[in-house]
Length: 98
Image 1: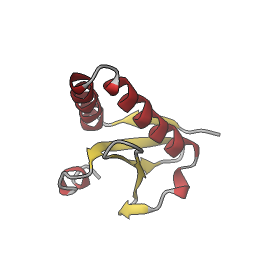
Image 2 (image 1 turned 90 degrees about the horizontal axis):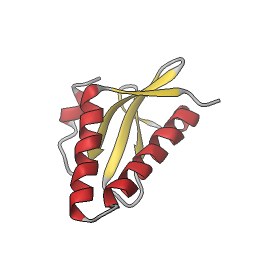
Image 3 (image 1 turned 135 degrees about the vertical axis):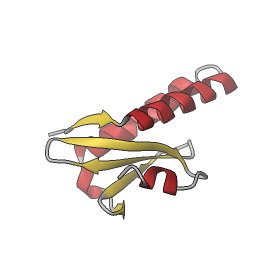
Image 4 (image 1 turned 135 degrees about the horizontal axis):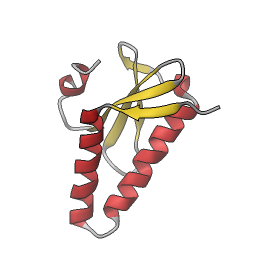
């Protein structure tokens, strides 16, 4: 059984901003980025506990092909996406969201 997924506002904004940037770089690249992040969120929602905690109770799914990770917290009936985050950014930015 798959859990539902909800995004924090900041995570949704990061996701949209990154998708727009990729789309501006090459047509359909933003669409491919969206599909990959959605794959990560789906994987997290289907089996959240297979991903090891990386900070407190926050877990991470690493995207393929794009230098991004999806950081989430598993709750009883859903996962909460805290960040869609580029790997070169300072992790302290998303860590304060926990």
